[in-house]
Length: 274
Image 1 (tube, rainbow, N blue to C red):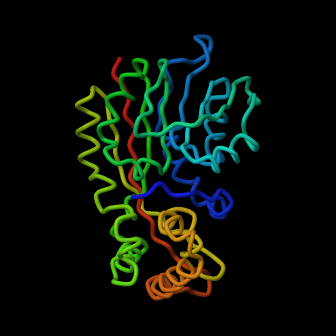
Image 2 (cartoon, rainbow, N blue to C red):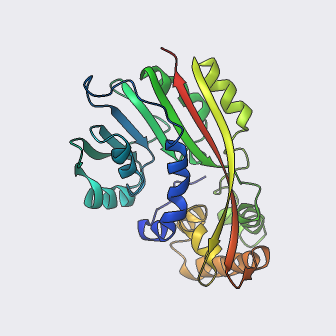
């Protein structure tokens, strides 16, 4: 799977729908070890994207020192311009380059969060030990990932990429079916690392609007590897997108009130035992 080039503008076209799982995740995060007057919490947002949901951390923990990490220059540029600086509650919000495959905290943290990122990180189960080790006692690791790799949205993309026309260029660049593990696998790994762990799934029924809204959605996320691989050949890129669009139209028919995109996500909150 290639490292895709990201488009913050395209990603943010569905910002409201994409932010809701993050707010649902934060609602299950308990009080952090560092609370006034003990000192400001230290928080990391791993895979922060354009920073639009990282700011929600400052609303929940106004005095926190928060760093959003991402490996996309395009996303970080947007985050720096739109969100970096002092927060209204007296905290601080910064952004920095990091790769979740190798990032290890350099100081103790109260909270490490990740929103719709780990599905892009092969071997992410093996990263948990380093992240948990960096948490203060009572600190938390909280993340959510799309859990719908078997949905038509992704299955049709993979099937099209595997056809004779597209396989030479796209056969190995899309997310694999094992990019997200079972809920039990996450629970077991985090519990064995000494955490009180809560894992759950939610299926959202997003009602999308506009022409080909499911295609518009996936252009901001799952389709990025294919768009990146074909960026040097606009004619081929447009042909692939057109074929995929037709498949999506059949799989996700519109109604008078919009087009429904069922989207399952997996959540985990792991609290390090004191």
